[in-house]
Image (cartoon, rainbow, N blue to C red):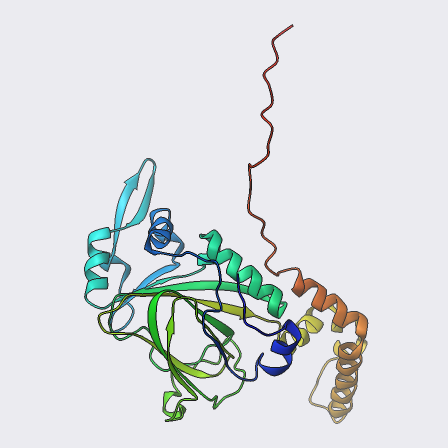
Length: 303
């Protein structure tokens, strides 16, 4: 389904966390249309807070949701008419974790997971014009922008703060974004654009045109995550990590012993393997349920 024209090893060595990759018609044998999106919305439970609408900023849920009585529960449901009016006015509908709600998108994420060897999940973006959702920003995870319906205008700029962590957002640093993009183009249905984390970018609908794309995010373990894991699971076994700092002259020696313990634990290959094995267990391993080929069990007559 996903054909980037590059091997897994080539992608990891030449592009992953290094530079963008743009491929025309990289999504093969995939028929995706608005009824696919509509089916997801029909079964959506907005109470999970994974649905949002943006029009000159994030709109309050009451702008497109109703609160209803559903048997013994009070629930939220999409108000189809109000949502349609907002989209007509240029709003963008954001649907988080669509990989859990659509088999086609789930399969795309699973193939990208095989490519990078890391967990991949997707958010969907629907619009019928307007100015887009977030303006110029960076993401704190790598992203594959996969255009599924219509077209969208993308601009990508080189990073000014390489490889940010989840807490390191771009909203207060937009003045740092370079003036000249390294990519300025239109993604059509079937196109894929890979953007490393920390690279500035913007995505805007084309006036008078429809668009639906997914941002398939790659969620990796960082070196700082390994350090946190060591602090929780390994370092308490070292006496150098349990001594008290009392503001005395020998505190410096204690810190030196602490650093030696951290270095020894971090360089232990067994610890690194335990950590990576646990992380890799979070990869996309979901299998679709299939009833095909099940032989009906005949009803036996009572003796």
